[in-house]
Each structure stands twice: as structure tokens, then as C-alpha cells.
Image (cartoon, rainbow, N blue to C red):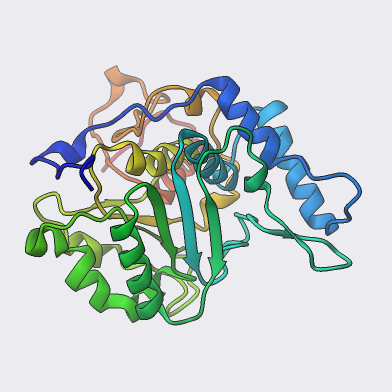
Length: 313
């Protein structure tokens, strides 16, 4: 831990440059969207990989799954390790990741991430048991022993973090204050607010916000794929380590408006505020701050009203 001094007050708000060179991005994208010849994959997987190739090299519109995989791939090129565990993480709860592909006739596994050129780090991804308390506790310890590894625990649904609440309360939120120990564990909490009922709809954002104090951790609900890319990379390019809780989306995974240009991955860093370029600044009378799917809901309503700004009454 010698290279990682504890963050000073306010340092968590620093925004390190997390964009990557275009040739690095394209080399990673090529590896992630090229299947080995002579092997028969499921037709659905083949179409998915071909579509991801077109996202980068054709229509220049990257979705959430591609952005997330590029974050991992470029971190591996930067020399960091990536470890992901949780229920159904190889595919992703809502089928957006597909980090492990299987052959149709033999169940042989192929992991595109292992083919990324210039990869210096190790990629490991494991579907784990429905035992959140045990698995999250193990990964917390792994992150404590390996600050050069992006350690991610993903709940199958965000509500499933309930089973690991003790780890969250006693360690993730408070260990740095109690024992002066840093930890860079990332929790991805898939949620939806799509009306699916108990334990399949909400990651309980309010609980994690209530645990925030004195820069102890970051809690985020990204709105665009590119910002999610920069958010994950920021965790490793900080000079310190802080826990990160991400409200992973459902509807935005395939939302036609939740796409990012390739240039957004090459330039800049995580954006704390994304300006609304559709509104006329001279006509603005009210400013609404929102995040995640809520922006896209409001934007759809604005288009329905055919007005650049809402008439707030």
C-alpha cells in the first residue's frame, strides 16, 4: 500500500484523466469483437459480437455493455488486474456483459478479454453462489490485499445486497475511519425501478447515500455509457483507493438514446455534471438535476411536447 497514500479531505472529487488513445481503444475493441475462426458459437452470441464491432467501427454509437468491457480491457492494457464475481456476472444479470462465450457443440469457453493486445494485467471473472455475505466479504478482503486490482462484486439484483448488509455497514462504509485501511472495492448493483416487485426493482440508493460521510466512498448512477467507462477507470487511476457503489441500469442497457460516441472514450475524464446541449440557455428559468434513466424519461417528454424546455407550472 506504500504507493497509495490516504486521500486528503476533498481529494475524492479529483478527476484524473481516464481517456485513452484512439489506437489503444480500437485495438481493445478489435480483440473484444473478433471471434476465433473454426469455432462454432451460438448464433445469438455471434450476432452480438458483430453488432459490437459495428458500434465502434461502423455507426460510432457504443452501448453500455461495450463501454463497460472497454473499461476493463483498457485497464488491463494499463497494467491493472480486473476481478469480477457475483451471481451470473459472466453473462450479466440483464445479458449485457457476455464476458464468457461458449461453443455451441462442446461448452468450451472463450473469453475475449484474454485476447486484448498489450494486456499486462490478469482478467478473472467468476459466477459465484447466492451467498452475498460470504462472497462480498471475500472480495473486500481481496481488494484490501491487492490495490492494483479492480475488484468488483455484482449483485444479481441490487436488492440482493441486503444479504451482505453487515459487510457494507461495518467495513465498506466505515473501515477507513475505524482502522485507517483503504479499500477500492466496487459494487455493481443492477436495478430497474421497472415495477418488477420486491428484490427485482431497486438497489436502495437511499441506503448508500445515508452511509456517505467525510468522503468515505463514492455512490454513482451514471447516465451515459462513456461516463460509466470513465467512472470504472477512475477507481484505478486515483492515487488512493475508495469504495465505489454503482447503480447499474436495466432499461439504459439497450436504450437507443443511451449511447456514446467513440470520441467520448478518448477524451477527458468522468463528468460530474453533463450539460444539456438541447436547451437554449437564454430561455432557461429552472435547472433540474437528474441522473441515470430519469434524464432519458424527461428528455422523451420534452420531445413529446416539442419544446426545448419544460413549462414548469
